[in-house]
Image 1 (cartoon, rainbow, N blue to C red):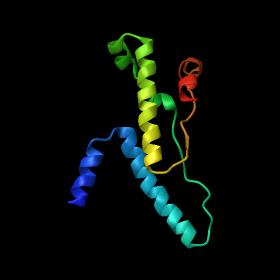
Image 2 (cartoon, rainbow, N blue to C red):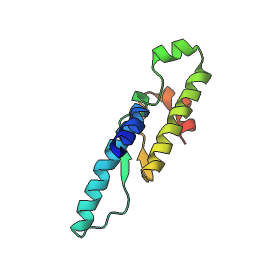
Image 3 (cartoon, helix red, strand yellow):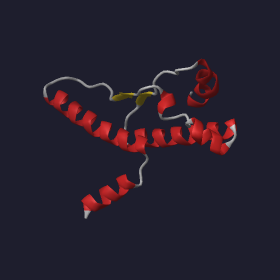
Length: 113
């Protein structure tokens, strides 16, 4: 019963949420092993590839929405999902990766910060 509930909960999650969940599980196991061996773990952190690969809507999505405002809203929506997932797993630090193009700095970094 618990396993089914867990599977259903995961089925409703986005790709980013699933990846954060998987990463959190591994990081918690590593933390447990390190603490058992006498090491102090100060923080658990996640670092990602460039945020443009998963945060910024692709060109096809942008064309469908026909407006930059909508892509900025989509970035905010995706950030909210990531933030909630990080909170759920008590991960206090996440590096969202670099901007690949200077326009991304101007368009999306103010939203991220």
